[in-house]
Amino acid sequence: SQQGEEDPQALSIQEGENATMNCSYKTSINNLQWYRQNSGRGLVHLILIRSNEREKHSGRLRVTLDTSKKSSSLLITASRAADTASYFCATDKDTGRRALTFGSGTRLQVQP
Amino acid sequence: EPEVTQTPSHQVTQMGQEVILRCVPISNHLYFYWYRQILGQKVEFLVSFYNNEISEKSEIFDDQFSVERPDGSNFTLKIRSTKLEDSAMYFCASRSRASGGPGELFFGEGSRLTVL
Image 1 (tube, each protein chain N blue to C red):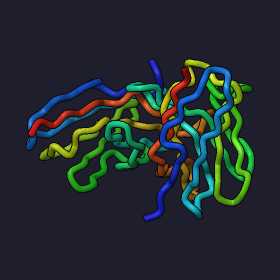
Image 2 (image 1 turned 45 degrees about the horizontal axis):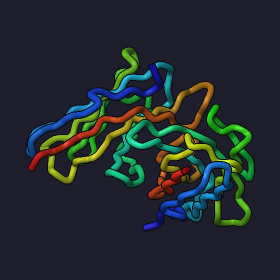
Image 3 (image 1 turned 90 degrees about the horizontal axis):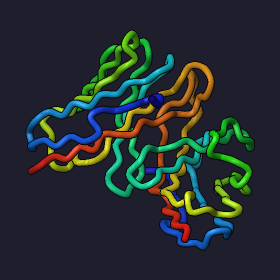
Image 4 (image 1 turned 135 degrees about the vertical axis):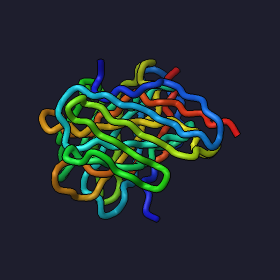
């Protein structure tokens, strides 16, 4: 599979619930980032976690990184309808190609 | 707030025609990128550019593609002879100088290319 694969591919929840998205990757990384994309728009950076960090918070976002399992999760707490978007993880490998490599994304639908 | 701007927002072209997509990165940024996204699919890396030269390119970025920074502000992607499969949203991104590898990328809103 590709570097940076998210699951689930799609997620539908009710407003107020928490949303958890997962990302797995293949090679060693320097950092992992999460981006958000509203339909038909550009990507917006949400949060970056370095390979020596295990957890990071930003507002309603919580990101974890497990380098032994080569996986990360993005938790959005108390979701809002405005959180409806696609969410992508992106990895910066520590060897080979250095440009960010994006996964396929998770499409999150938050029902009001 | 500074932003990356892209033009055109949408371009329709005939197969075999040349297309130039334009980007104005954030003014103090040093690293520039083009990515593309076929409708509903993953965001694919095309090329990165630093210090007036290509620093990395993907398998997608073949001889039909070229990039240029003709002046101090614009960053362009040219597709010499478009194919149907070039239809996609093309995103420009930039970042400031950062140590230890890519930090946050700032993306434009994209240029949608439709090849007929």
